[in-house]
Every structure is written in structure tokens, then in C-alpha cells.
Length: 94
Image (cartoon, rainbow, N blue to C red; front, side, top):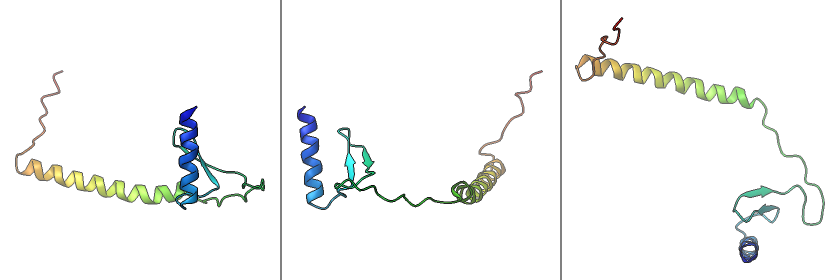
């Protein structure tokens, strides 16, 4: 009971000091929830929807994944060239 009261007091002081929006609420555990209605009861408009989210993710991830594989391949070749790490084919004990 006292933890709920302390949480409400902290949230109220944060709203009054301008640290967070009065439209967002916070659980006792500290997780933020966004409000669907205003304090007067009006329903908020729909949030903006990001279109082509998966395509944008793929356009960012795939080039960097390719660059990372090229860097690791060149570094492995460098290590093998200087005899720092040489993979052995002794694992084929048929």
C-alpha cells in the first residue's frame, strides 16, 4: 500500500516539474504505459504508423551484415597468413 502511494507521489512530482507528460502513466514497477484518453476523457488520435518497417530494417541490416562478414573473412586470412591461427583438417577421422 505504501509503495503505491510513494509511486503516485513520485509520478505527481515528475508531472509538476515537467519531467514527463501528464498523458503517460507509470506502473508501480516503473514501466511506462501510454494513455489512450486525456484527463478529461477525450480519446486521443491514432498514432502515426511507420510504413515499410521490415523493408527499412532489411535495408539497414543486410549491408552491415555483408560488411561484417567481409571484415571477418579478411581478418581470418590475415591471421592464417601470419601463422597465428591455422585451422587444421585433422577433424576428419573417418
